[in-house]
Structures are given as structure tokens and as C-alpha cells.
Image 1 (cartoon, rainbow, N blue to C red):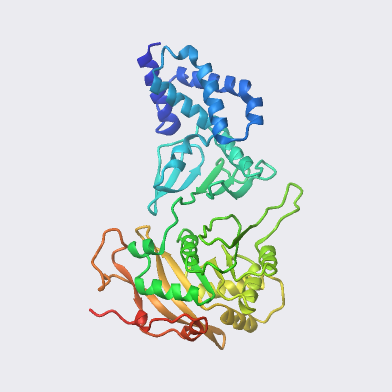
Image 2: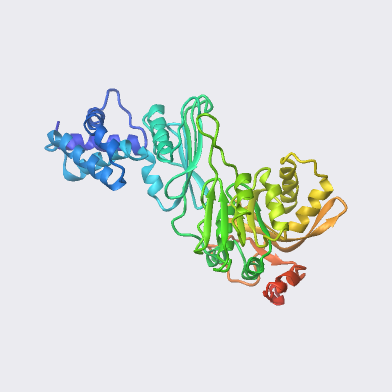
Length: 454
């Protein structure tokens, strides 16, 4: 076999492993070389791998052993080809196989593996199919097991689901057969290395300057704020932005299923839930952590996502001296957010009259920020509403800012990087909570609510 032939086979192998499947009528000699090398590698270094924990040292160990194992083929492989082969095998042994380059790609925000041959990614809010693929269902399952093990979790037929986070903060969800009928499924929501800022949201058109000034004043003035939106609308990102306006001296307790918030303040305590062990014991829920946080002398409580009975404890905390708390929940409109909160409070199992729930909700929550995802994939603030109180069976709200569609913002020059065809418009009505802000020494500029002039 010539070096050119082996190089061609290497390219084909890489195309199949990380690209489009190549046609072949017989087993690829290079694939045989890869498999033999991998088997020999695992046999030779399995004990060393078990004793070594440092990621860089592990990679160096595997690379050294690989160089030794492929020395017989060195005459047929040039330097770049050998390096590519080593890289592919290292990804197989230590990494995440064909999705390694996707996880390393800064333009990719989410990786979705729907079986061996369908790997999708999200780029700039758009989902697209990639040419990458796994060799087999077993190969994909091995990667999933490796990911779960790295997080101290297990996944097998007796426990076929796992939901956790990687060391860099990326969220991972995996499901294997028998729950996943068509083969293992893996979803990784990447954790952004660079946290988005308030100015970034304004630049992208997600938020207007007056609306930003309003929510900044609301956070500084210790109003209780809920961020509502559907899946993938950027609730956690927006919560991160809101947190930047919390004064540095405040003691903040964050509560999440999997840590995603990235606060810049120093006085922060991060709490994370824990799933049950193999015996079904030891689970720590969001509700457990919310209750415990009340004993930690917090100035601010931030709940990453409210989805169950913890809503009752969160509302009680907001109503009993823990002003300035923040949280998110899944809902498509501010009205839906109110209804969903009521439902979640009822999940606590207490016989609380619906009217009492609404009154407590209206007393606890000051502002609801509704997020939306446009047809273009852009994530924007759809509305900012003030909770006024209860009128009969309804929780009354005052829309302070509402997104207008079908026209350009008269107050700015069109910019291709911003979501054209929509903008946030003020209602022109001064918020009632301005008096509450004043008690905390925060003055709200009345010009924020002025309607734009054509």
C-alpha cells in the first residue's frame, strides 16, 4: 500500500467518521488499522488510564502510546496523516467522537444527536443538519456512558436517562433504549464562554435602551422579577444580564437544576439539585434548596427555573422580606405565566383557595419580562409587564413595553445585525412601582416611558 493510497483511505475514513458516508464494498484497510490500534491501545494503557485523572496528562499518555503503536505504519503515513489518525482515535478513546469538533466550534450553541446518522446543531438561532455521524449505536452509547461517568452519573437499561452538566457548564440530556426507540439520543446545550452583556442585547435589538433602563432600575430597586418564555428563548441568558445590576454588596443565593448562571459578583452561593442514587434515595429538589436558602441570610434569591411545587416557597420568600428575587419559568405570554404559577402552587398539595393564591402572587411578583423567539431565530424581549394586583378572579397587569411587528423602530437606523421588522415600544404610562423604587433610593427617569416621535 502506498502512502498516497493510505492517505486517501484516511481521508475517506475521516469523511465517514466526521462527514458524509463513503461508498465501499469491502472493509476499509484504514478502518481495520484504526480498530486494531484502538484495541491494542486500550489493552496496553487501560491500567494507566484508570490511575491518571488529569485531562492533559491523559491525552499526552494516549498520544504517546498511539505513536508507538502506529510506528509500523509510519513509512506509509506522512506527519499530517499520522496526526489526523491520532486525533481521531484520541476522540474515540477520551473524547466525544465525531461531535468533538462541534463542541469546539464557537458558532454552535446546541448539539442534537438523533441516533447514529442524524446530528443537528443550532447556529445563530437556526437548526441545521451536519454531515457528521457515529459508527454505530454502540459507539454513540459509549460516548454517552463516558459523558455520564464524567459527571458522576450512570446510564444503562435500568436507568436510561441522564440530565446533568459538563465541567464547562454545558447542559447534557441523554436517553437510551428502551426509552429511545430508534437508538440513543444526546442533546448538549453549550455553555457560552463569553457571557452576553446588556449592551449586546441592545445591539442585537433584543432590548431597547429605555427598556434596559427600566429593568436595570427594577433590579437595583429590589423588585421581584420573573422571566417568562418558551424553550430556547434565552431565559437563562437574560437572567444573567439582570444579575449584573445587583449591587456588589448583596448576598446572592442561586438555585438551579444544573448550574448555568454566571454571576460576576463575589458574594454568591451556588446551589444545585441532586438526583436520587441507584437505590432511589438522596434526591435534593429545587424546593428543598429554596427552603434551605431562607436560612442562609440571602439578600437575593435567584431560581434558575421554577417548574413545580417550589413556586409556593418562592412566592412566600418574595412576600416575606426577600425582595429583589429573580426567577424564570416556561410560559408563552405574561397571562400564561400567571396561570402556570397558580398551577405550580397547587402542586404543593396544600388546600389553598385559588383567590388566596392569586392575591399572594400579585403581592409577591412585581414585573414579568416575556421573551420570544422570532421566525429568524433571533431571541428578543416581547414585553415587560407590571403586576398591579387582583380584580375579582384576574391578576391585573400593566404592559410597560410591548414589541411592535411589521415596522421599523423610528428612533434608530436599520442595522442588519438586529431583528428588523419589530421593536419595543413604550406604553407611555408611568409604572406604579416607581414609588417602591424610590423607597430603595432608586429614581426612575420619567423620560424612559415617553413615546417615540416620528
